[in-house]
Image (cartoon, rainbow, N blue to C red):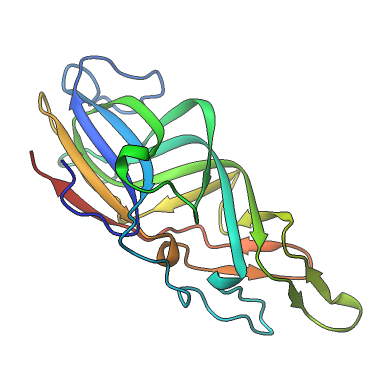
Length: 227
């Protein structure tokens, strides 16, 4: 049961299971484990706000109204596991069997049509946030964006898929969802809704004469769905 939907929704479901993935990096995964289902969808009740990103300026900030699509190819999902009484949290990685392509601005409507990204075993416990590994990312503009002046000026054309960089990451592109905290219960089914509004979750897109840059953090909310 989904109790709360707004914008796009990542649906996380943890159900009791004894299996686990080979990518596990902490010792909590074993008999006390659950199954994680991660999927993307969009609620039809909320329209994408046009002023979510900064208006275009000489600094190159791109408005959400100027963007037609942002496609990302997700190859793995990381969840930050917080072991009880431990000083530091530890990332747990699940690699997808096949990359999943998502358009962050055009997710399917409703959880019943959600794009399922991951169904994997996950150890029981508390997870603080998520990271999506991205192999490729492109942006298509709905209108041309001109940056700079003189010999360094550039016009990014509309209707063409341009490569986009995800800022601030080391050794590969990742999108962080820091507010996506959830708990996987031992021997119980748990469903967590991560409420993702594509109009406000994509925090910043900046065009320069040489490349287009996207902020590495997606803002989302979580909500427990009770049976």
